[in-house]
Amino acid sequence: MQEILYMEMLGSLSDKGFSLDELVIKTKEMFEEKGMSGVVELLLKVVDENLYIGLQKGESCWKPASCCSEPLYDGHGRRHREFRTTVGTVNINWHRLKCKNCGKVLIPLREFLGLKTYQSKTSELEMVVTEVVSDQSYRRTSRHLDLIGNVPVPRSTLHRWVMESDCDELKIDGRVVDTLFVDGTGYKRRPSDGMNNRGEVRVVLGVGHDGEIMPFGAWSGKSWEEIGKEIRSKTLRDGPLAKVLVSDGEPGLSEGLSELVNDEQRCHWHTIHDLSYVLWKDKASRKEQRNMQKKMTGIIGIELPEEDFEQVKKKDIGMLEKSANEADAKLDSLIAEFINKGYDHAANYIRKAKDKLFTYVRFFLKYGLVSPRTSSMIERMMREIGRRLKKIAFGWSEKGAAKMTRIIIKRITSANEWENYWKKRLRINDNVFLIYKGVKLHGTPPLLGR
Image (cartoon, rainbow, N blue to C red; front, top):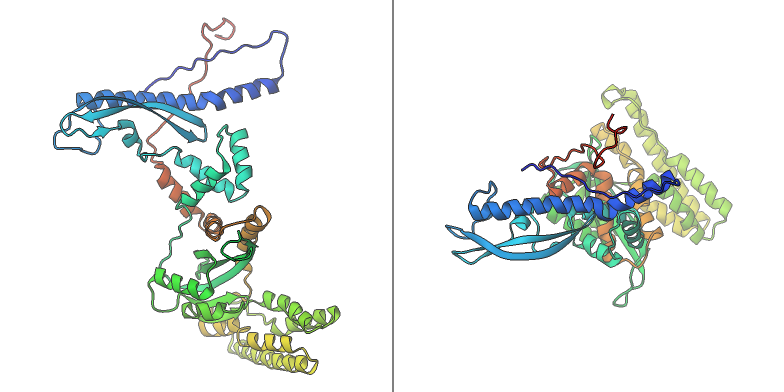
């Protein structure tokens, strides 16, 4: 169906002068308050009338779901509905039909638009809300929608919309990735059932050899063992999902995810950074902590060849193996030094980490591929998650914190999947074309007509 719309607008401009800013602001207010939503309302009214008449006469190109073998429709009154949209509140008094043969009531426009029975907002508004609240608080989002878009929505309603949405679902398959990155960050949880306000959200990401990122999920209130079992149940794969796990050595992490990986690489950055805290527990001075961190950095910093594995000479491979063995021996000496100085916590810390510090070297020698030795790939993600959960809000529920984390992960790592999800939800299939053909004065003055 094609219609030509005419715009009617009354403009009263002072002969004594006015500012361009006032003209722009007043025009913007007019279109935001009634102009854009009025156009949508008119177009819906036209479609509603065409469906109403066409179905009664049996001439409609569009056919609703059959209510009986021989549907015969008759008018059954109207019903007022309003929808929140990004262009304002859209009101419509849509027609209702009733089948004379089976008595079933039909609302043609609602079925034509694919709306749910009690739907009161558009999916495009839900998309905007979801993207905005992943960057700022619900309170500020509510205020911005009202001030900028003239869409008054309470923050409690925004929260309900986000929590009911399935936009955060991550597609997990059984593909094997090269590296599994895991990390966690704390947040202020809403205390309940005797729990304190210290919550933690945990994230698992996979990275393939081509750099493709596969987010496995985000959880709050679950142990690493529970997370490992959930990932296993979703992937439906018996063998390991990744060759190497890169982690910060958090207690219980290796054991909980051990069945998902072949080997583990301790993050070098976290190992050196956390050594300072361990030495502090051993009452080492600040200067001693810094010296030991520098010493540790020098021991574990083995650089891999820049050439492809096939181009690396046997001599260089032998030197690489020798460097790894020497570094391993130096760590044993460092452990002995810690024990002699009474740094028992530090000695135990290095002893537990030692076997997993040079996995990236063994990985290169075995597969000829470069494996990360730090978790820097996931750090940007965790900074963004921490910013939203820690600095912008507090008092999260565990379910809400995990859901917001998955939304952030999906937007950053799977932008195409995020876009395709909303394209499918919004049913953007190039079925609507609107062309602006200009605005004309009624009774155009001679000079303007030239």
